[in-house]
Length: 325
Image (cartoon, rainbow, N blue to C red; front, side, top):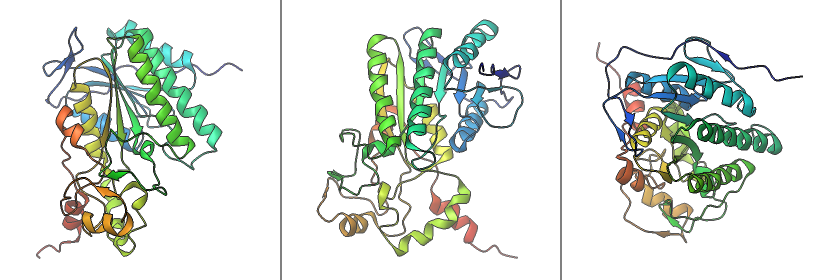
């Protein structure tokens, strides 16, 4: 049986809101003066919804490529495991809308344990290959995609070599899910070697959270080991979207990885106390701020200008502070 062809709702997801927009110049540098045409895979997911919202608010034309979600203008149903479908959508946009400026690839089985290992490998690896290869075929030179903090050695049953962990830390995947994320990064390295003009940016997102998730955070303080599996990290979905925007603005060809996390931890206890209690033999490379993240975002700050704007502490405090009658 032949796979069903992708279904495209005409047009783009757009907004009349005036925001900062971007365009890609001949040397792959991105400026902030024109609207970009951007395809987002997985735009109906937890992070994807925030990314689509942020890009449209900033004035860009967005196409959501997904298998699930609300049908409507700018949505295409596509099975990313089918290369022909992916290529048809991207080349079809090339014909109808003067092409795409960038692809943001977020679609995946989003965590270990949600499907059998073989299914995770087949779905995530093949989908990413198809998106990367279709982008190359269509001449799209800017790809931003979701890698994962899990390549760093989560759940840290083996101690990290130092804290905070950073991009210099050797990848240590401990599950099929994280193995695929590592292999995707290795694939991107080779694809950008094959095409020196291609830019692929891997964003190693921490655990993505929406504001409604924050009510559970105070309960983590009762046991420091409950969230040690990712060094007590998280990222607000809205800040994840901000990181995508900053990566799209980031000029220059080649491959780069960035850890993307909130500036703080999920804990009420201090970061220094947590590190000393749970990882007593691990070298701490710097004096940690009171609740400073142990997933270093220094590289993203330095090269992307990324600065998280949201903290669970503020959201939770605003919800629990009584209002005056």
